[in-house]
Length: 101
Image (cartoon, rainbow, N blue to C red):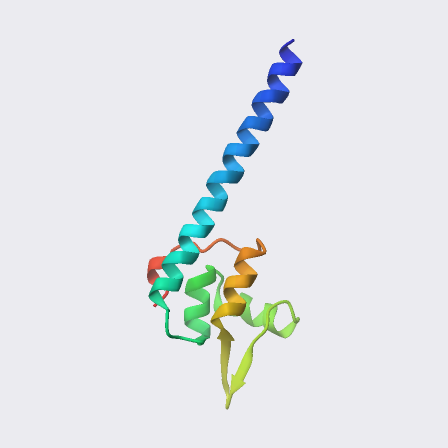
């Protein structure tokens, strides 16, 4: 009987955690979307703030083809929609969406 209760509790906990995590991600995406409504492309710094990853990590991800980027002269830009898709795929949860502006 205790094993059944433990399994039931574990599955309930997983379900609640999954729902809370999804809600947190959705809220972060909405906040980021609100803050950067009219920007199609974002800079390294903005991409770092949106994803919570360092510029150096983004550079590595970009060079290894794990995340798309675009060049404007010598400036590296990221398409905002690509970053949001990348986040939705579960690669990262934005740590502080209020700073992404």
